[in-house]
Image 1 (cartoon, helix red, strand yellow):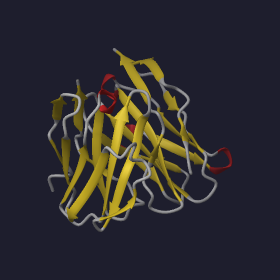
Image 2 (cartoon, rainbow over the protein chains, first blue to last red):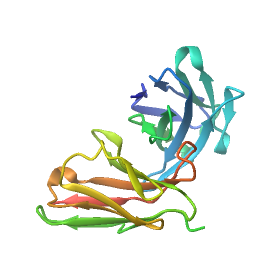
Image 3 (cartoon, rainbow over the protein chains, first blue to last red):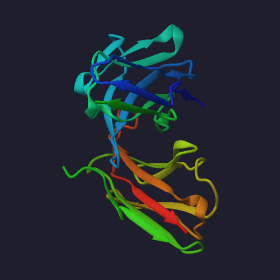
Image 4 (cartoon, rainbow over the protein chains, first blue to last red):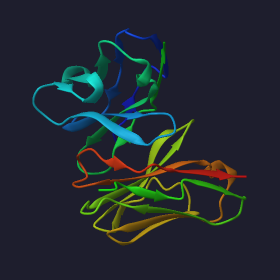
Length: 113
Length: 113
């Protein structure tokens, strides 16, 4: 079974700082990778996804992520964060068929004005 | 499309009572997933259905939990009897193919006292 590790449980940044959230997965086969965001009191929303092709994928709200197969990583980045980016961010993977998304524990991001 | 609809949004019940959570997936989506979110364990897949048939219920924590999908537009997750450790946010999600990004409902926040 696959697993997902998010190394940073809590991150605090100032507005305009650059962001990188780490994500590593364990499954060795073909994977589909996702980042979801959960704003306070809301449901999960898809930020971006990777299935194949260009390993640098761009999502909504200025976020991007890079798939590095050799490192089993799919890190999320944003060059300049805003206060409104305060939320919980989840990395997720599907591997080996449609058996449900496996999520990391999440990273709680706080942006200070 | 109204998205994935869950009810109720909040549920407070006493230990030992039966609790039923409801989900209406997006029309045309063949896959439906139930997740539980807690601070300690993050997002856990409980069970998922394909074309109304339960495919994998290995995430269901105990026999007190049961889920049904009597038709393509409705699913329930039942806990009987409920216990305080069942307190969590329960999310339902649906997907067209099961391998692409899912659409999540707003969740049901369950509190068992």
